[in-house]
Amino acid sequence: MSKRIAILGSTGSIGCSTLDVVEHLGPPYRVAALSAHRQIDKLLDQVRRHRPPVVAVTDESSAQKIARPLRDLGIELLTGPDAMVELAQQADVDIVLAAVVGAAGLPAAMAAVAAGKTLALANKESLVCAGSLLIPLARKNGVPILPVDSEHSAVFQAMQCGRGHEVKRVILTASGGPFRTATLDQIRNASLADALNHPTWKMGGKITIDSATMFNKALELIEACWLFDLPPEKIEIVIHPESIVHSMVEFVDGSVIAQLSPPDMKTPIQYALTYPHRLPGSSPKLDLTKPCQFRFEPPDLDRFPAIRLAYDVARKGGTAGAVLNAANESAVSAFTSGKIAFGTISHMVELALNQHNVKHNPSLDDLLAADRWARTTVQNLIQTHEAAVV
Image 1 (cartoon, rainbow, N blue to C red):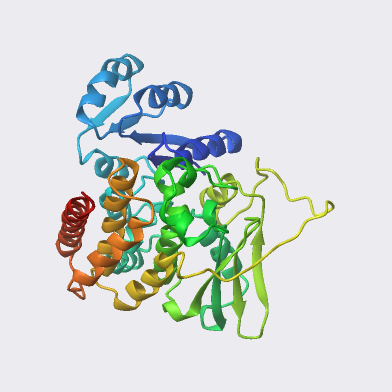
Image 2 (image 1 turned 135 degrees about the vertical axis):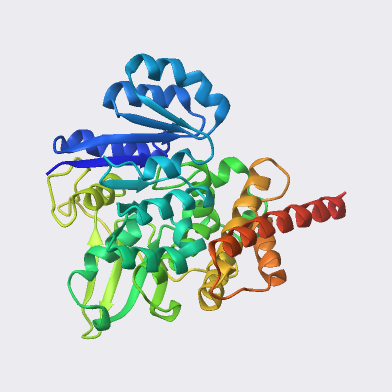
């Protein structure tokens, strides 16, 4: 049976790995559609190699640059801000792999579920911002949401060993990022190069910085609440520097089931594409014949306040998740452009959350409004911060 895959964000690290996985699997898996924003040269290389029938480019000026080459190849081009939504609804698509970073991927994820497509989700922001809408819609339409994040894939796999009511807790592992052993002062004054120097994973810039602040793990905690229908009290985070144990599930009988593999995103990507089956993979294999050690330690909430904020947001629900995500995106952007120090990212997010009046049972318009409010609020806070520094 054919599995036709649309990759949203094909030029990013997850998108590129997904194309490698599809190429490794071969028929019946094939690329049905690709989307990108501005990396046109990389996209064109992907198109020539995989020949998808349709391509979406969300940046209008970039779309103009690629229009003629795609026309010569006989490939349909979708353009504009709604291009990904249209792509996700294509009739000849079976699986939508959502790998666009940030809240920009939310409308397409919603469209895929509404259209009855299987959603392989690498865009954690969709659930952080709109889990209250996306999960009920998926249940209504009988659409599976398959996690692609290595941690959530590990939990999903471990969950196959028991039933939901038998789960005592979920344990999400975190590498600790580049600042696992850094002092608070070193973290506060870290450079962009320092923040991008992840010890075990190779990821895009935004996700790597989120790993350094541990906002990546904060988002994953909220996502796990929605994916596995768990209260935040049943989810714990531990630091695991080796990044071999990707997460664990403890059941009420005391059994702890873990998923282990070398840090390579191709493993969880392939499981999402082939589920419920397992096929030979191309990722590096775990070799336990060599000496190794697995370390686990609790996170320091003083050095990594993002985790504390995530638990609070998960308990509040409503529009709080959208605010946390948007505030973080805005603060990270300010850090990468040199407007604020690394240690100020968490502070800006917390200030925005403190100023926000949470709206419960929000509509999509409410969530988008909260997103816009958070970005504006952080920008205003940064301007005030800059003025104070001057």
